Length: 217
Image (tube, rainbow, N blue to C red; front, side):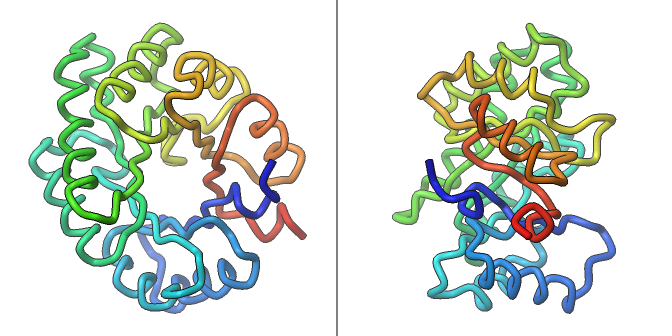
Protein backbone atom coordinates (compact mmCIF):
# COMPACT_ATOMS: atom_id res chain seq x y z
CA UNK A 1 0.00 0.00 0.00
CA UNK A 2 1.25 3.46 -0.90
CA UNK A 3 1.46 6.09 1.80
CA UNK A 4 -1.85 7.91 2.23
CA UNK A 5 -0.80 11.20 0.61
CA UNK A 6 -0.15 9.41 -2.69
CA UNK A 7 -3.82 8.41 -2.88
CA UNK A 8 -4.97 12.03 -2.81
CA UNK A 9 -5.86 14.31 -5.72
CA UNK A 10 -5.75 17.67 -3.91
CA UNK A 11 -8.79 19.39 -5.34
CA UNK A 12 -10.18 22.87 -5.90
CA UNK A 13 -12.93 22.93 -8.54
CA UNK A 14 -14.85 25.89 -7.15
CA UNK A 15 -16.19 28.29 -9.77
CA UNK A 16 -14.89 31.23 -7.72
CA UNK A 17 -11.35 29.92 -7.15
CA UNK A 18 -8.80 32.71 -7.63
CA UNK A 19 -5.19 32.58 -8.80
CA UNK A 20 -4.10 32.87 -5.18
CA UNK A 21 -6.31 29.89 -4.26
CA UNK A 22 -4.77 27.73 -6.99
CA UNK A 23 -1.23 28.78 -6.09
CA UNK A 24 -1.98 27.82 -2.49
CA UNK A 25 -3.33 24.46 -3.67
CA UNK A 26 -0.08 23.80 -5.55
CA UNK A 27 2.06 24.85 -2.58
CA UNK A 28 0.13 22.50 -0.29
CA UNK A 29 0.42 19.68 -2.83
CA UNK A 30 4.19 20.12 -2.91
CA UNK A 31 4.40 20.31 0.87
CA UNK A 32 2.35 17.17 1.43
CA UNK A 33 3.55 15.34 -1.71
CA UNK A 34 0.03 14.56 -2.93
CA UNK A 35 -0.52 12.49 -6.09
CA UNK A 36 -1.90 15.47 -7.99
CA UNK A 37 -3.79 18.72 -7.91
CA UNK A 38 -7.20 18.64 -9.58
CA UNK A 39 -8.34 21.95 -11.06
CA UNK A 40 -10.58 23.41 -13.73
CA UNK A 41 -8.97 23.56 -17.21
CA UNK A 42 -8.23 27.30 -17.09
CA UNK A 43 -5.70 26.70 -14.32
CA UNK A 44 -3.73 23.89 -16.02
CA UNK A 45 -0.89 26.09 -17.38
CA UNK A 46 -0.37 27.76 -13.99
CA UNK A 47 -0.30 24.41 -12.16
CA UNK A 48 2.03 22.86 -14.75
CA UNK A 49 4.44 25.74 -14.19
CA UNK A 50 4.17 25.66 -10.39
CA UNK A 51 4.55 21.88 -10.13
CA UNK A 52 7.21 21.27 -12.76
CA UNK A 53 9.83 18.84 -11.45
CA UNK A 54 8.01 18.17 -8.16
CA UNK A 55 6.49 14.77 -8.97
CA UNK A 56 2.99 16.13 -8.25
CA UNK A 57 0.76 15.60 -11.30
CA UNK A 58 -1.62 18.10 -12.84
CA UNK A 59 -5.16 16.75 -13.16
CA UNK A 60 -8.05 18.59 -14.80
CA UNK A 61 -11.72 17.96 -15.53
CA UNK A 62 -13.47 17.51 -18.88
CA UNK A 63 -17.16 18.17 -19.60
CA UNK A 64 -17.44 19.22 -15.99
CA UNK A 65 -19.64 19.08 -13.99
CA UNK A 66 -22.67 17.90 -16.00
CA UNK A 67 -21.11 15.76 -18.74
CA UNK A 68 -23.77 16.74 -21.26
CA UNK A 69 -21.48 18.60 -23.66
CA UNK A 70 -20.84 17.14 -27.10
CA UNK A 71 -18.28 14.39 -27.61
CA UNK A 72 -16.40 16.69 -29.99
CA UNK A 73 -16.23 19.37 -27.30
CA UNK A 74 -14.88 16.89 -24.75
CA UNK A 75 -12.21 15.69 -27.18
CA UNK A 76 -11.11 19.25 -27.95
CA UNK A 77 -11.07 20.17 -24.27
CA UNK A 78 -8.88 17.12 -23.61
CA UNK A 79 -6.47 17.96 -26.43
CA UNK A 80 -6.07 21.53 -25.15
CA UNK A 81 -5.57 20.43 -21.55
CA UNK A 82 -2.88 17.90 -22.50
CA UNK A 83 -1.07 20.46 -24.66
CA UNK A 84 -1.11 22.90 -21.75
CA UNK A 85 0.41 20.41 -19.31
CA UNK A 86 -2.29 18.13 -17.88
CA UNK A 87 -1.01 14.71 -16.82
CA UNK A 88 -4.46 13.34 -15.98
CA UNK A 89 -8.02 14.16 -17.07
CA UNK A 90 -11.22 13.35 -15.19
CA UNK A 91 -14.09 13.33 -17.69
CA UNK A 92 -17.79 13.32 -16.82
CA UNK A 93 -19.94 10.85 -18.70
CA UNK A 94 -23.18 11.93 -20.37
CA UNK A 95 -25.37 10.61 -17.54
CA UNK A 96 -28.50 10.77 -19.69
CA UNK A 97 -27.00 8.24 -22.11
CA UNK A 98 -26.43 5.83 -19.22
CA UNK A 99 -29.97 6.27 -17.94
CA UNK A 100 -31.30 5.68 -21.47
CA UNK A 101 -29.19 2.52 -21.83
CA UNK A 102 -27.32 3.99 -24.82
CA UNK A 103 -24.20 2.00 -23.98
CA UNK A 104 -22.53 2.14 -27.40
CA UNK A 105 -22.93 5.93 -27.56
CA UNK A 106 -21.58 6.21 -24.03
CA UNK A 107 -18.56 4.08 -24.92
CA UNK A 108 -17.82 6.26 -27.95
CA UNK A 109 -18.09 9.41 -25.83
CA UNK A 110 -15.48 8.05 -23.40
CA UNK A 111 -13.33 6.62 -26.19
CA UNK A 112 -13.02 10.02 -27.89
CA UNK A 113 -11.46 11.46 -24.76
CA UNK A 114 -9.22 8.43 -24.22
CA UNK A 115 -7.92 8.56 -27.80
CA UNK A 116 -7.17 12.28 -27.54
CA UNK A 117 -5.43 11.80 -24.19
CA UNK A 118 -3.32 8.91 -25.45
CA UNK A 119 -2.46 10.63 -28.74
CA UNK A 120 0.90 11.83 -27.41
CA UNK A 121 4.01 10.21 -25.97
CA UNK A 122 2.80 11.41 -22.56
CA UNK A 123 0.07 8.75 -22.15
CA UNK A 124 -2.24 11.00 -20.14
CA UNK A 125 -4.28 9.12 -17.53
CA UNK A 126 -8.07 9.16 -18.07
CA UNK A 127 -10.49 8.85 -15.17
CA UNK A 128 -14.19 8.58 -16.00
CA UNK A 129 -16.71 10.15 -13.61
CA UNK A 130 -19.97 8.19 -13.51
CA UNK A 131 -21.88 10.48 -11.11
CA UNK A 132 -23.15 7.39 -9.32
CA UNK A 133 -25.82 9.24 -7.31
CA UNK A 134 -27.99 9.32 -10.45
CA UNK A 135 -27.51 5.67 -11.47
CA UNK A 136 -28.82 2.31 -10.37
CA UNK A 137 -26.40 -0.49 -9.48
CA UNK A 138 -27.09 -2.10 -12.85
CA UNK A 139 -26.34 1.17 -14.66
CA UNK A 140 -23.12 1.63 -12.67
CA UNK A 141 -21.97 -1.85 -13.70
CA UNK A 142 -22.80 -1.23 -17.37
CA UNK A 143 -21.09 2.19 -17.31
CA UNK A 144 -17.96 0.59 -15.81
CA UNK A 145 -17.98 -1.93 -18.66
CA UNK A 146 -18.17 0.96 -21.15
CA UNK A 147 -15.09 2.48 -19.50
CA UNK A 148 -13.24 -0.83 -19.86
CA UNK A 149 -14.23 -1.11 -23.52
CA UNK A 150 -13.06 2.46 -24.14
CA UNK A 151 -9.64 1.71 -22.56
CA UNK A 152 -9.92 4.27 -19.77
CA UNK A 153 -7.60 4.01 -16.77
CA UNK A 154 -9.96 4.73 -13.87
CA UNK A 155 -13.64 4.79 -13.04
CA UNK A 156 -14.56 7.57 -10.61
CA UNK A 157 -17.65 7.90 -8.44
CA UNK A 158 -18.62 11.55 -8.45
CA UNK A 159 -18.03 15.18 -9.37
CA UNK A 160 -18.80 16.43 -5.87
CA UNK A 161 -21.54 18.56 -7.45
CA UNK A 162 -24.27 15.89 -7.49
CA UNK A 163 -26.76 14.91 -4.81
CA UNK A 164 -24.34 12.46 -3.19
CA UNK A 165 -20.61 11.74 -3.27
CA UNK A 166 -18.69 8.50 -2.91
CA UNK A 167 -20.23 5.67 -0.92
CA UNK A 168 -18.64 2.45 0.30
CA UNK A 169 -21.27 0.46 -1.59
CA UNK A 170 -20.58 2.14 -4.93
CA UNK A 171 -16.79 1.97 -4.64
CA UNK A 172 -17.06 -1.72 -3.76
CA UNK A 173 -19.43 -2.35 -6.69
CA UNK A 174 -17.17 -0.51 -9.14
CA UNK A 175 -14.06 -2.38 -7.98
CA UNK A 176 -15.87 -5.71 -8.20
CA UNK A 177 -16.89 -4.85 -11.77
CA UNK A 178 -13.57 -3.58 -13.15
CA UNK A 179 -11.36 -5.88 -11.02
CA UNK A 180 -7.74 -5.14 -12.00
CA UNK A 181 -8.55 -3.90 -15.51
CA UNK A 182 -9.10 -0.34 -14.26
CA UNK A 183 -8.52 1.51 -11.01
CA UNK A 184 -11.20 3.22 -8.92
CA UNK A 185 -11.24 6.83 -7.73
CA UNK A 186 -13.57 7.80 -4.90
CA UNK A 187 -14.56 11.46 -4.75
CA UNK A 188 -17.17 13.58 -3.03
CA UNK A 189 -17.64 13.85 0.73
CA UNK A 190 -14.25 12.44 1.78
CA UNK A 191 -13.33 14.80 4.59
CA UNK A 192 -11.59 12.73 7.27
CA UNK A 193 -8.98 9.99 7.61
CA UNK A 194 -11.50 7.34 8.69
CA UNK A 195 -13.55 7.80 5.50
CA UNK A 196 -10.43 7.92 3.33
CA UNK A 197 -9.09 4.64 4.72
CA UNK A 198 -12.50 3.00 4.40
CA UNK A 199 -12.62 3.88 0.67
CA UNK A 200 -9.12 2.47 0.15
CA UNK A 201 -10.07 -0.68 2.05
CA UNK A 202 -12.88 -1.48 -0.42
CA UNK A 203 -10.82 -0.80 -3.52
CA UNK A 204 -10.14 2.89 -4.17
CA UNK A 205 -6.70 3.60 -5.64
CA UNK A 206 -7.20 7.37 -5.63
CA UNK A 207 -9.21 9.84 -3.57
CA UNK A 208 -10.52 13.18 -4.80
CA UNK A 209 -10.84 15.59 -1.91
CA UNK A 210 -10.38 19.22 -0.96
CA UNK A 211 -9.66 18.05 2.61
CA UNK A 212 -6.28 16.42 1.99
CA UNK A 213 -4.50 18.55 4.58
CA UNK A 214 -7.15 17.79 7.22
CA UNK A 215 -6.99 14.06 6.46
CA UNK A 216 -3.21 13.93 6.86
CA UNK A 217 -2.98 16.36 9.78
